[in-house]
Length: 205
Image 1 (cartoon, rainbow, N blue to C red):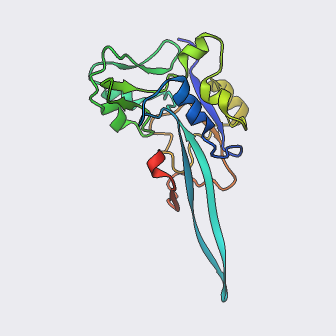
Image 2 (image 1 turned 45 degrees about the vertical axis):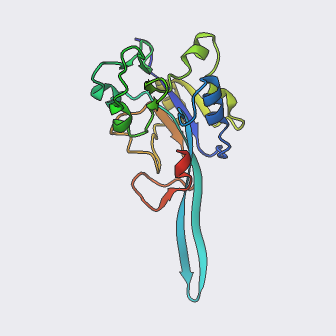
């Protein structure tokens, strides 16, 4: 098996434009209601008192989310037909011929990466743009980002270049599934579990 591939997300550059999300949907011709990459806005804060005056202590930032092709993927463990499996390049993919659409993978994934295509009757998910990579092109989300907040490649190289942070709020603790993801946190990024904010666009993610 080749080196494990993963994503790098520079949160300091993300403006929440959703170009990555749109490019993914367009390139993969995804139906309404199916999003392999989603952009969440996380916001919160409170007021600080200074005697009789108050000042806001607020924060807001964006998180671009997709499948992280985890080292310990729970989606493959719960799949009853082995449709959800790791490909030769380390990327987690769905065998549509074997998938029965039970949605166990969707419910178990902490990132909600597997998405059910109701018309097709089976699960779908990010395969790190296998078709694009086969032609020597970048994954659509990476190529579309106008601020170059996304990158991809062998996860060991990404970690060597950018560190090993793999979670900020509202993402789950990375120790659960060992995601192949590296994040450069926003200056206001909240640590996992802080619970001081909420997703401001829940209907979109």
